Length: 104
Image (cartoon, rainbow, N blue to C red; front, side, top):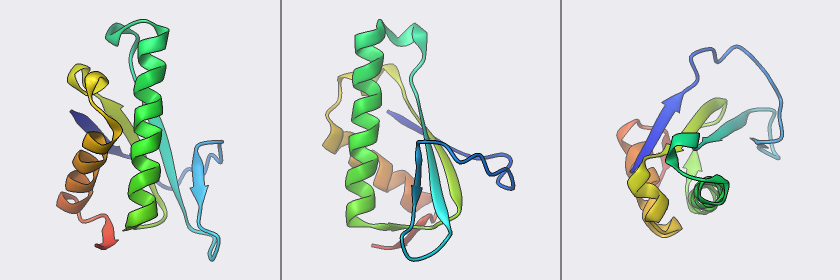
């Protein structure tokens, strides 16, 4: 239900409103949320982005993620009907597979 894409150009430093900075160091995790127009009307896409934000916020509150990484989170059509705890579980599974959680 969830796609995770790492930044192709990690050396680029575009500081935008979606970046989450670590308070103890200058390293950061940049996150983008993508839901395409083909997935529904604006209210459906906005709900999808809200779900992604809530899921990422939940995961970062429970786990430590490697810093200085950029992510693009995107939902498939099935994910638009899911709840944020289901998306959070998928996100944790993907981050563990890619070895991006520093400890669990």
